[in-house]
Image 1: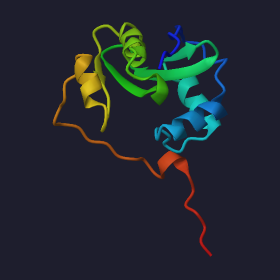
Image 2: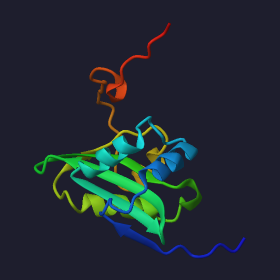
Image 3: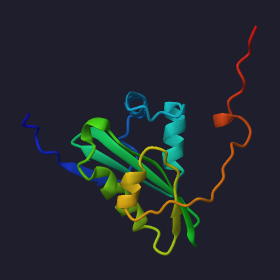
Image 4: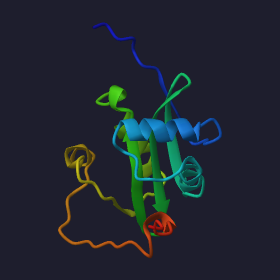
Length: 145
């Protein structure tokens, strides 16, 4: 198969993102954690740093970074569309975000991409904990009746 070479551009501007389409793409890639399109938009627009990868007008990657501006940051929502993986898009997005936080300890959670992050210089740590404050995504429990 002779696939056309991708021309990827990167932008920090969330304005052109179709959040409903992004939710569909995330669901297709089994990367949807239940956020609505509006919640996705808010997640990205209130983050200190976010980046979007585009192949022409097609959104093919996202990543964002939460940081305190002093010493700690958290990498999250690193996603490349499955049909566009293994072409350096995720690597480039992470690299661009890391340049924004020199000297910071950058943490992340992953259960399926440890090899990818190992290749970017991250190391596994045996310590760490997390919890959900209240209900997941602040959802009210479903009423049964």
